[in-house]
Image 1 (cartoon, rainbow, N blue to C red):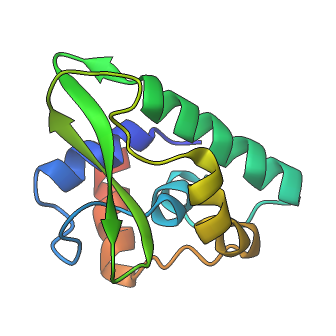
Image 2 (image 1 turned 90 degrees about the vertical axis):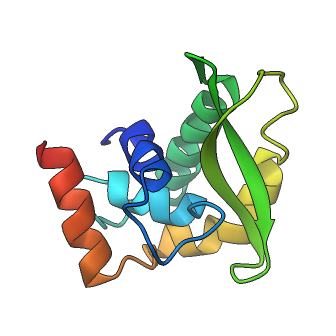
Image 3 (image 1 turned 120 degrees about the vertical axis):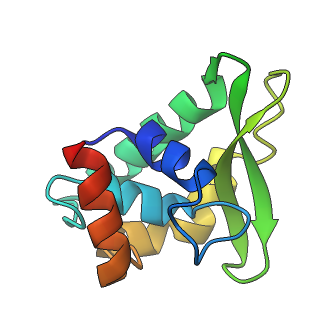
Length: 128
């Protein structure tokens, strides 16, 4: 998988203008697939990759930046972003179960909601 941190850094830099409060976990998982948007072969693989990404995000704390979530009414679930604040274990403000319950079926189906313009942005990010 590609690096989710590069995607959240790009969001923080304003490279995804259609997103306001953060990126959906399904989008992040999808753009981190190689190739971008590749569907998982098995449900278990999708679950494990999403769980690993969540655990990495929850523990992330570098140079004062941490990953947080906001509840998004547009996506009807949590969206993720980087912010500069003091880390604590509860700062991510969501659980893996909440993410999986909301986005799991779409992740398993390979329905990542990646537009063609977003794909171009991601390709530029990972080619840099």
